[in-house]
Image (cartoon, rainbow, N blue to C red; front, side, top):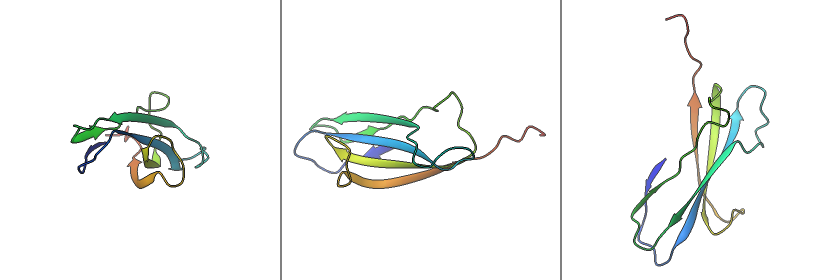
Length: 92
């Protein structure tokens, strides 16, 4: 996920935490993968890279929580993004 930043007056971290929202056989509370990026004072953009947890994304819906600050807690949550992985069509 690539993002643009508003003007900021100090450095901070951006955390991306990925959970299986609706994925067969996975508990929605299970943290699958995460990434953290340090944002320096002069940075205008940044990115979070979420590699597949076991080499492949299982079909289903995933939720990514975006946290900003120096640690993850309930007040550091800045937003939530979702994405869906479709099953591979092996017939075509």
